[in-house]
Length: 249
Image (cartoon, rainbow, N blue to C red; front, side):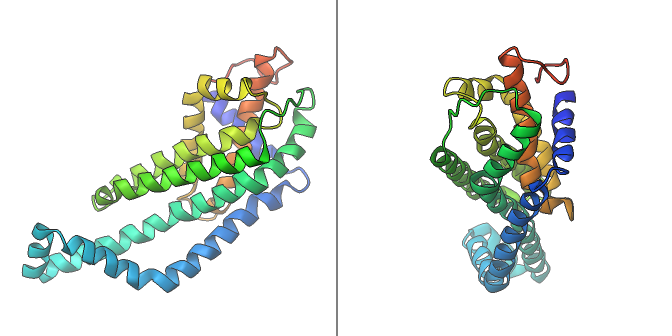
């Protein structure tokens, strides 16, 4: 936990570096605008579609047909679920943009000032980053779709969303954080060795997606935190000078 908090603290410090703050903001603003437009245009068709899907269940249809109060409660629950679902979708869209475009740019700036002692072995590529991010997002969406019936249970959708988002953070940003400095052997090895810590880091970032205002910065901030966590781990792996004594867990 201490190493995760340290990575967050360094990510905050990186915001003071020239050009980093802008990359923290624009991906989320763009994603929020896209989903706001989609929400306005497709809100009623989505509500009708979900209600029709639920109505195809015999027991649910019988309950809604015999109780106006029950039908109204289901409608309210569906609308709440769809509204909550929009938050992770904004986050995942912004995370995709961050992983493919913004994070590589921020990585170069942060690496020059804080990790200049690390040799760049360039085990990753821009193409590899894009493919990795797209795969992470697609698997995230599959997880969301598979778990949709459970979202109708109050609270379950939130937990599922946080866990899936945390996994996506780990998958997408873990590659990008090491793509310039790690070699082809170090990249998968470090991500596997520090898997638990990377997932914990992703959980904290996923929670930020539900905090007003902070959710605008969450995806790019998360990417920066992964950069600091993994580059410090790489520095230790190579036996270089460390900024702290503890090894990431």
